[in-house]
Length: 102
Image (cartoon, rainbow, N blue to C red; front, side, top):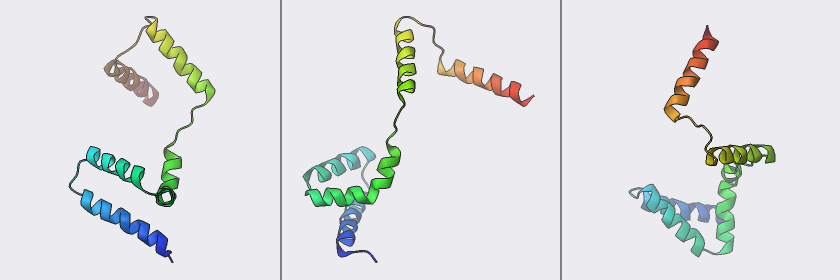
């Protein structure tokens, strides 16, 4: 059974959502930011608790090796290295996949 505090928090969120149904995503984000910035600490913690799993899953950690490879590629590009357009890359990938099927 949910505690009174959790139900209160859900009620606040539901009111917000019902008011937000006709708003654009940008307007919703702005309103959410403003709301979170203005509420007391315990409410922030309650909201965080409700979405903690999703928040944790959305945080991507890159390895040092991966970051170094990205840095290397950016440096290559900035020094005039050859690049390919997205369209060309799609063609190349399609060709590779077709070879793999045969």
